[in-house]
Image (tube, rainbow, N blue to C red):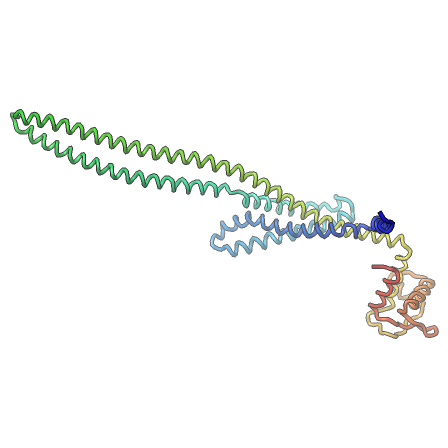
Length: 373
């Protein structure tokens, strides 16, 4: 390491204050907290819109607008109340003294957190979609099988009708022959043949009926198997989806914590910077002089004071300071005037004192002289 690098590093380490050191962190957390509000509104929308849709089924625009306004209002209210709680707690360092603000903050944060969590679950959960998809596939599958079954059944019904028609014809032929008594040898043979043929026809009809029944049962079994298969796959999808739901809940929790961290750290950053700067003023004589001179200059240099306007006497300036609750000695005024004269803010003409610079420029010159940013 070179000596110049060491000096720069030493200056950075020793001279860096809290305001400068944590400025970037404060900006990032502040930006993340506002982004968190947007994300919180987005997630909570899925919960609130579902409730509002029950009352306003056809007004999607109204539901969207109302949901965003309500949730946005809750987020802004949460931020403002927690912001006030943070600064009061930092000032008083006592939870008991800011208990009303704390309880109100917890209530609003709880409402917002519950809305975000519920919305996250609603957004991530696809159980209803999985069930709907399963029912749709089963319906399509069963309809397809039933159409095939119906077409086969119709063919078989036609076959049965044809066989029954033949059976009726043979019944009628047998009846007609048997009505002719006594029967000849040929007639008796024919009756025997008809009985055999009728038995065959009945067997064929029974077989077709059995085939129809078997086909119907096979169709039901296939549909049931499909239901079991899809049910198993749907349950697996639900399990996988439940993991996503848990992740969304975790993300929603982190979003809420980010908002609170951003709001609290911003107030802590401002409060710590203020305390650090105030301590610097109290301990540094240079800053103390600047504060005194700036106050005196603000008192004697009024808004309507013009260039080359004559300033009051030292005694009058002391009296003006007293009126403004500022106690100064004659020596303070003398030193003040010397510095102002040296900086060219005022000029002397004999014992008279005159304004020599514009008001804004005068304060800027004073700050630069004391190296105050």
